[in-house]
Image 1: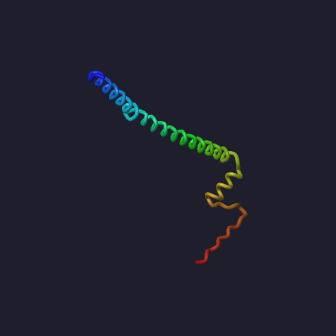
Image 2: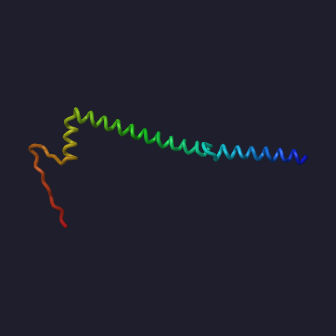
Image 3: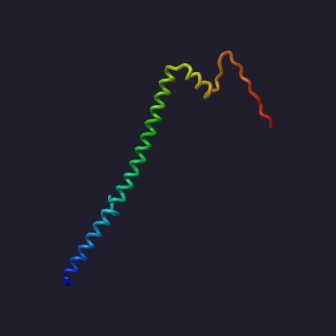
Length: 95
């Protein structure tokens, strides 16, 4: 093999590996593409969770508009309210 041919082969190999480096590790290369893919997966998962929360909140709103028993349960559990003819007993804990 002549020296001129060796130089051409070595240059071609260097150019080839340079392209591989740029494609794999360069800006907007394979590594960045993979990171973006992972970010999209996380955002999709977060989006599904938010959609579920929105559905649950919508159902709660509908029940608050129409379901008196649900409203009563909320008033008792969150506000500590009691019924009209109910008596509340509070016991002290021993030290």
